[in-house]
Structures are given as structure tokens and as C-alpha cells.
Image 1 (cartoon, helix red, strand yellow):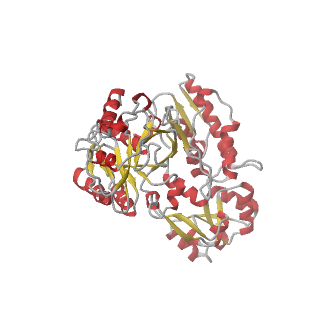
Image 2 (image 1 turned 90 degrees about the vertical axis):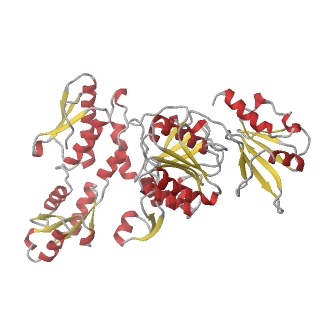
Length: 537
């Protein structure tokens, strides 16, 4: 908003004040004022953003002063709010037990631009976003700017469900700050859920913007909107994602929680109690952004993952973004931690490898975790359990032994007992489980078959899968450096499917092309600088 526009809007607010208050308004000092407070029996005051309070004269406010103001604004709604047409100002009333107004809070509305520049890349992803934060940190301001961005720059059909006319201002014509977004006013706050559904059913929006989701019915309406494929931008009551999870009324916005009883093996693996809390369903919102203060945002790019981490007690660090900085979608990433023994090895991939500044990229650690930390459950038939567990422990493999065939991902059976175990094996085949066979119950034989079952390359005595992955990614990084320096193409050494997939993802992050070539154990990557090859796994 230009200074002239703000001056004109402020004039409209000052005009409704009595003369004894109006004469003390000093325009140059109003730049950071957020409220003008008028209470019976006290001097009127102005409140600055940093908490400073100034009094507007020494005269106490009277009922005549209150009546003077209320007679110049529109009728108050059931939530005791009113406004001034054509502006973003909000007038809120305090009533006594006889329902007479004894105090007014005049909230000064401003159009502040640039508050979403640091999350612009996120707003353009066509994903539903939920903003959290304490009152006064700028949630509504960001909704207003996002509405204009999506409607004007992306040309999408945006509908604002404006319960208290805070987003698009009072009056029938939406404030210019929301651009070409359309606005549906809500007669009374309790009807917000109905207007949200009406917006979807009647006006074919691509994006719906809602301020202050606060009831279970509104949370359910939000889920209905998201399930219909409409992008949803909203704010909710709550300071943080963790507090929202604990709120039984609104936890459905992030998937809800349910109590689950674990089996003995699973509880032991998690090192937790048998009864735990887990996410109940897919979250309504793909992304959650906590507004820590007016200049700092904490971004959770994957709500489902973040909720799972919090419920399991795993530490998670959201991506911190500053309003005065710009961010590139390809260079930003939420840093998360899953379990110390694994993340230490993952961090080592970045810490041990020295590379020039041009390669200080953001590797997708989450994808890496998903690849190497996905537990495989192995069902053993006539195979030594103690030896198998020693192999898994010694090689630090992502696997565990299960006693239940229904839980298994892989079956390892003794070849000499195939006939006797026909029923077990036929059940495994019905469940489409892979079956691997050993010839003897020796350490070497069991180790070899487990590696084959987990698609792990042959390892020597002191080498783990993590070491091979680290070296493979190191080789890929050096090859990328050569391409960026002018080489036309570079071929890497042969790797298994899982490691090649990680190398492909690494190459993609540098906008280069890679292709798997060769057959069998000789299959490897070729990296090129142009678009000469289409990626293939």
C-alpha cells in the first residue's frame, strides 16, 4: 500500500473518532500503530507494534464518545465486530452484562507487501497451506497477499471466505489488496463452514482462502474442500504444529491422532510402549507454516511426515525462512532427523566429502532416509534365527526377523526343507512375497542370501552399505563438477538399482541429465550436460 493510500484509509478511521480524541492523533507517529483502544472511564490510547502504549490526551472516555463512534460504523455482528467500508480497519466491541458497549478496539488494517516473498516458491506449488501463529503476527496479512499473488500472477480462480471482512475489508467491494480474487462474506461466524462448502459447490474455485478455522465443523469442511481437489490456504488457532496436534477439535487438519496397540516386536524395535499415538489419516493441509514473528517463518514441507515425527518423539527441525531473504525451491530443504545412529551416517555424506562452492547443494536427505532406513521384515523357514540376527546386527542392515508370515516382506527358507514347508511357501507365494533359499545354515551362506534379498552389493568384512553409498555419491558429485566445468559426459562405476536411483536424483538437482546404461552387474550411470539423454532407471 502506498503512503498516500494508507493516509487516506487512516483518515477514514480518524473521522469516526470524537474531536477530543481526534485532535491528539499525530500522523507521523502512526506508522507502526496497530490499535486505538477506547474504554469507558479511561483515557484513549494507541498501541504500537513493539508494545509501546501512548495516551491520547488526559480526558476519560464517556458513553457519549462510545455512541459517537458506534453510530458512524456499520452494525456489529454476533462476534462483536464491525468495519469501515473500503478499508481494512476492524472495530471490535466489548459489552457489559446489560449488552451495552463499554469499550472499543480499533484495529488498524494495512496492506503490507513482501511478507510472502520468502515463501513464494511454496505458494506456487499448488499445495494446501496452513498458517499457525499467535494473534498479531501477520497471519491475515499473508493470506491477503497470497490471494493477490495466486489470483493475479497465476491467473487462478480464487474465492476468499471472509468471515469478519478482515481479509478483503468491509463493504461490498473487496479491497484492491486482494487483486482479482473474489470474496464471499459470511453473515455470522457460525455460518463459515456452510459458506466454505457453498463456495466449492457454486463458484468452481481453484483456490479457497479462509481465515481462522476454529471449530470441528470448519475443520471437516476444510477436509471436504481438499478432497475435492481444491487448493486451500488457511489460518487456524494455535501457536505451533505440536499444539495443533494436541487440540482434539482441530487435529483433523493435520491428520488426526489415534491410539494404536503395537505388537511385541514392533514395540521393541521402536523402543516404545505398546500403546502409542499415531496419525489417523492423510492431513488436510500438505504444508504447515508457523509464523514465529513478523519476520521469521518455520516451514514444515511435509505435514504427514512432521506429524509422524512429533508423535513418535523423533526430533524434527523445520526450515527457517526470513522475510527479508529470497529462497529458491531447488536449493531449500527441511532438515529432519530420524534416529541418531542413521542420521550420523547420513550427515557424514556431506561432512566427509570436500567439494568446491559450486557443489554446496542441498541433497534430498529425506529420500535417502526412505531408501536406506526402510525396514524389511524377514520370515525364516528352517533357517537359524540366531545367525540371521547376528548378520543383520553386524552389517547394520535395515531388516528384522518376524515370526508372523503376514507381516513379512521377504521369506528365506532352507532348500532341503522345501517339501515339508509346502504350506508355508504356498502362503508366501499367494501373498506375492519373494522367497530366497539357503543351502546350509552357515554364517557365510545366510549372510550371502540376506544381502541378495535386500539387494545389497557384496561387502567385505569392514564395509557397509552406507560406505558404498557414500563413495557412489561422492563419485557422482565429482562427475557433476566435471560436467559443470565443461565436460560433455562422464560415466560412473556400476552400482545396484537403489544407489543408481540416488545418483539420478543427485544429478537432477543440478539440472543435468543422466541415463542408466549397460546390463546386469555392469549397469551404471552416464551423466551429460545437455538434454541429449532422457532419464531412465
